[in-house]
Length: 410
Image 1 (tube, rainbow, N blue to C red):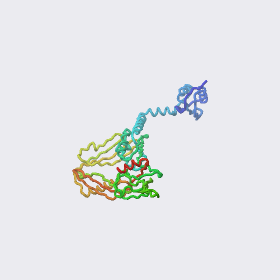
Image 2 (cartoon, rainbow, N blue to C red):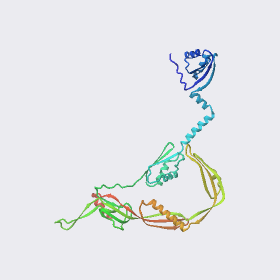
Image 3 (cartoon, rainbow, N blue to C red):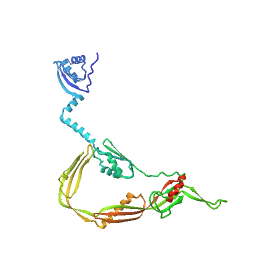
Image 4 (cartoon, rainbow, N blue to C red):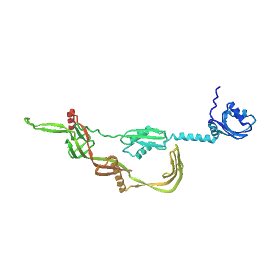
């Protein structure tokens, strides 16, 4: 006869206290009826404690009949634990809230990791991402295609951008484009040609012939040092003098004066903000996508200054931000900026232009600023002249020398 599968004590067990005579007889009867017992402790001749499975409890009562006093001391197992837990409304509500928080947390970006950048700083990339709507604490519903398009337009020399979510992490990978011409093999003849326009200042030709003397204005593609070197032949018995040519791999450095003309703008007037003494104090709170600013709701001032003290800012487990806000009413008047202020700002813009547009470690030969006042703005024309090393190798295809000569003449 096969024993019925009664499950496990881990599911649901009952520990009971049995009081009465002939306890050994009761245990023997339980074994005969296939009632598993465990942890049997004989306390005295009339008292014992034992554990059995909950579904055998009614059978045990029938076996004991009314000869024993039976008291349930405790119940164990995952079934009674689950029943007890879900029997309390507060526990159910807590579990639901916990599940909602986990789900809500999964809809926001808690961290942004940026990989692959070299010439840009991480703060520059994060600022550009924030302008596109991707920042720590934002919703994951942001359009990633729009984010990538913004980065392509905002950051120069970007070859590829990848943005993906890994859980609550947004991973941004940037591949910068590098325009590095492939050098010509040393065994092949080549010219050194201009890679930007400018006025040749100095040429050091270690191999090849100088094709652009000092002061020559060159454009990209013009030959600076030619790899075609003429050779005069005076061999005996040759009537006259024949001129032939040989091909070499040009080597050398060419320095040119490169002009830059850049335009910037300034405000002609600056705003003077005078406090009136009126102010509003409130709070700003953000929880996930919910935003509330009590001071902005009550703000009826035409002109005001906004100040905030952040008290709480976290993105885990969900984005929460809280701050105290103060809005001061001000009267705004315009005052024309002085020439000293304009020139000081112009020099700052010139330094910015040099940093953004010129290669590093170049020599600035000349710098001039021209101001053109308008009705509300001032145009700033910045003229720069820098001494830069120019030139790149270009292979000479000997079969196309005729075509090359035509190009040079043009």
